[in-house]
Amino acid sequence: MRFALGIESENYPAYLEALPEGFSLENFFVSLIRDENLTSIQFDHHIEEGFDWEIITLEVADFNALFGGRRRIGPFEIMIVEQEGEFSFSETIDIQKATIAIPGVNLMDLSKATFTVNFQTPQITDTNGLQTAAGLSTWSIPIVEVFQGGSTAFLWADYVLEPYEGVFVPWEMFFPYVMIGFLSLGAISIFTVIFVNTVIKREKKPTLKFK
Image (spheres, rainbow, N blue to C red):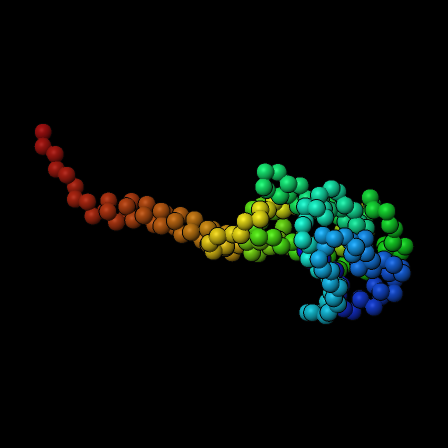
């Protein structure tokens, strides 16, 4: 599981200056470090395409054991439910229900800040995120909507532990081809109707009738 906070580089120094001590992204995950189901936690910071990214990557031995019950981490509430071999992952981001408060958050310029969550499993069967691979779902949430607008972000994905078989085609790539196919079929149908009503009927010889 990968969490990433991206802030436009020109606003990043002001963001760090305004952020109170102890409110960095990595501090939210301190409670997980000693959990035996967490095999690895990595913190990273890099600059890419004009954004400063703070990234936390979790490697988990047993997601169901780590998040089997509702687990709150700062403004994040994560839960995984298992039912007959199928799993449902959900994450709620709600700053109003969190036990933290960030002084001066409404004074920060977060208009260009984005929080990204990547959730990777052997096979995702359904999700409200962007599924770019058979086992990968991604969500990008504008920080200003959650931290300043008071909105609640709800992320979910259903998955199984069996690897995906075959060639996975993301719906975002498949959908345009479906639309092109429908439009092409419609164009062919219209052309056929015009052809029948004009050319064929015009070439048909009149029939002579005798009384």
